[in-house]
View 1 (cartoon, rainbow, N blue to C red):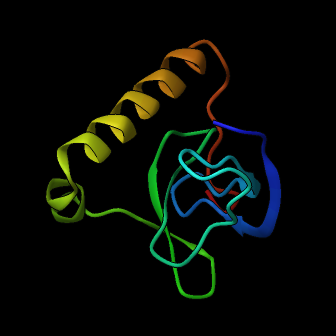
View 2: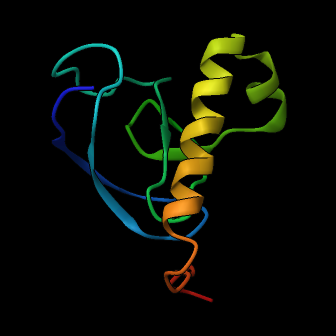
Length: 96
């Protein structure tokens, strides 16, 4: 993985945290495109970039349909984020 970069500001649809950066996994310095996958660094939700580069939660069906190596990489990342954040206060949606 190479360095991170600033993206268009979007909010995690699960925890509401403003997300304004990303780190490419496979392609050096690649900005996200619609359909690219992501994981929220705050709540570990599995996400997908929409056409306008806002974020949507990945459905269970979409996750199941991913290639096995992609699915496993996302789930490992999700598990790692949850482990790192385990003793931090949980963030909630701003409207909750």
